Length: 137
Image (cartoon, rainbow, N blue to C red; front, top):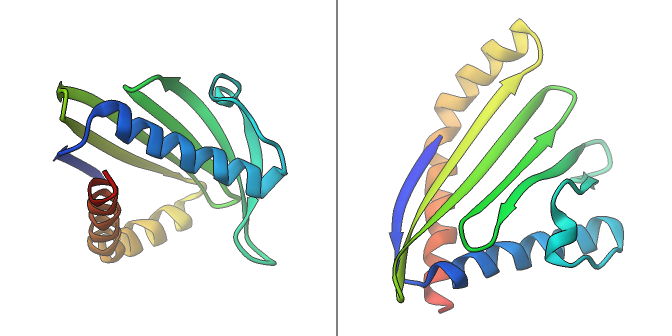
């Protein structure tokens, strides 16, 4: 999945919103309060419910430009990349790319079918999140 959108917020503002969300997620999952520089390479387990959890690893951060993280489950690995490009002092362009690697052929087929069905809803939900970030500025 890939989404490219011009945002009416500065790159610094968008990046800070994303990092604040990451730090909140880390705090909720681990009880640790980290500084931004401590996030690079940080791994933690996030529980979604009693039976489902995933390992999350923050792979790369470049202030106001890039955020990459990986979510690993027993079935798949998801890599999400936020690339932020400043246009001017009041706007930026966001490129969000999500890639999924499935473990096993049957899981790959299952993910391909469900991915087609769910991609519309995921894109719509992501665009709504971007709109909420813009509105909060």
